[in-house]
Image 1: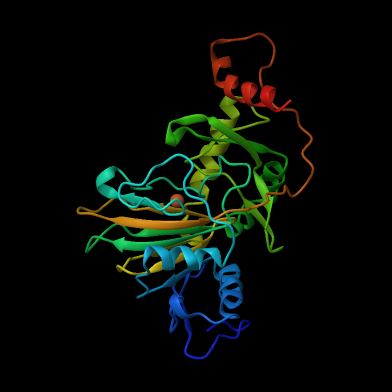
Image 2: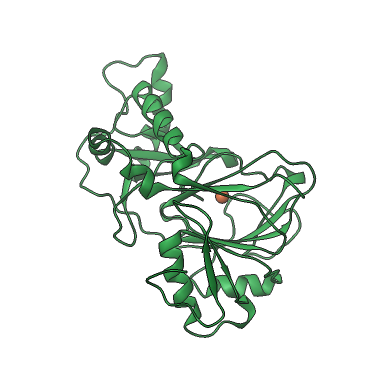
Length: 297
Ligand SMILES: [Fe+2]
């Protein structure tokens, strides 16, 4: 049980990882009292991922629960295989829906989601676990010189994995923690394309290191699913990943709470690297960044 947050009667909290993730039981999302949402928000800020087993909400109950945390949006690029509700995002494994690259949801948007609430509708008996990683802890474990370098940089994110590479935005490589708890390493292998202030060679080297670093087992938790479980995660300071090791159908439905505001930890001063000197064959790697910056002017 949390030492700092007092839980309503009958609720119980059990940590499942040393870096993040707890299971919350003894409640039903269909019958929450007024103050319960505030308690869940505090627990989420502390534990980053919460698992609520045995909920099995209807679509409307799932959406109603999500609305208690903020404004919901469906997915901008991916259409659902089965459910047509505009606020539900659905992935079915039979339709290729396996998120098996580490990512923070939708960082190609200027203002990505605050949090997501996932309902495991159907899962295989074994396999298809999801992992999350704590991006504050990942940043804190870097050496001071590497931290200082990262704080000076920003990165271009795009929706190329959704076949929409023209959807781009730039975020700082290190962002302020939304609750003032240290700094957050904010690049991911799925959506982060390049470091803005570096050549493509330097960018590739650094991004490869950083996006692998966040996968270090010290920072992560792994969850084995049961049908009917809800998972709530803070999308501002975590990444997640699905193990693509299962056979059989796996269907998730998610509501997505929008409205993140991303702030760098310091004022960035280096100029973007669009090209340096004369054009070369490798200048093609700089064109997407150049195009994005030209449109922003
Ligand atoms: Fe995701």
